[in-house]
Image 1 (tube, one colour):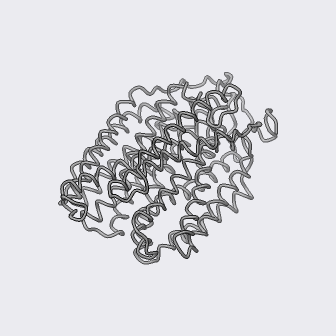
Image 2: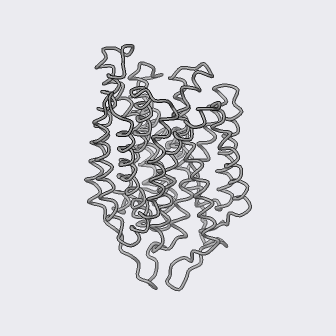
Image 3: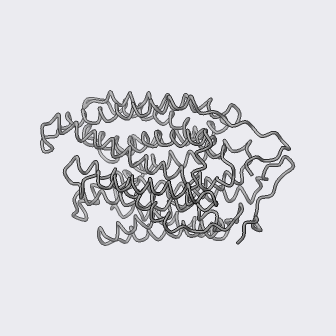
Length: 494
């Protein structure tokens, strides 16, 4: 490979924008469908942990590793994908991602014990980590500016709806089947996507030589892995189950992150950075990543806390819990294309400001939950949250990646995915830790926790989340739309 465009470089139309024909649309749809499957899998274990713990005879501290190891692997692999997308054609990279995911799903489905199940989750995460940056970079490379909002709306469906549907599907399956069926259900879909992609996925975009800096890879493992692991330990420490003090992992992660940033700043002068930090020189992108982080904290924090609240406080079953989260996920899916069209016609700010405002309002409403709250109030509040998030993710995708030069698109998408995983882990740790500390404080001891004290803990945790979301609402006013390109003018992002 060389620095010149590869044989499959993008064609350009009369207006100076890349043509978006049948070949390019096929690539986008295959990536969208595959990304939906792999992201759905990310939260499918949330409702399944208690049955898995009972079946395999493991404690909550051990079982939590099924989620922690997944997040750790994602946070370590995602930074490397920016380099991979530059070096490897679309089809072989897609095959690698879906092969890893399919193999991990098969391992998990056939796992005789905890060790093999954990290995399956780690292998799954490796494929998941490649898929989302590959999808977003391909969209920015192929889709003309005037159509990008609608495509970003479909990506927002993948990002927001798939995690929301995970607990619903999990609850439905666990009501009648063994937990292994969670993976058996996903396996044929993943296998079909792999086969279709291997045959039909076109090679798109441009390739160039991108040398691998081993030290950057090692520092990314220590930094992102250390931070996510430290955040995951906070919740365990609140219960007295942490394997080590959380601050140890957090300090190691922070020091490694400082070294990683310094290394990237030096390497990017020669275009050799693992993650090119020049993406943050573009203000709309920098603010969008910040807003992505706050929104991901709200999404993943609520996804972990709502099932606990509904089951442990309101006393509902896993099936009812899953069904309560289903309408919100479907609503986000229905709103995605509409929001995308609004972004194309009115700009991102038109949807982003009210979207962040509604998200913050819904979190404040969750701060009103008690042990006597109706499930209908929970449903209505979650629907409100879904409306807010639908108005957040699509505009952010459009503004963030659309504002970057195309040479930085792969780095930008990898950075967004990394921020989402770390922020999701932070939101989960923050919500669970606050809930645990307040519940124990109200009850007097961990053994004396009741639905009433647990309701107090979830209420305060949601209020903390509401405060975080309100900061995001304030930031949204500073995000500006990119000027639309003039037809026939040279592409400034080229």
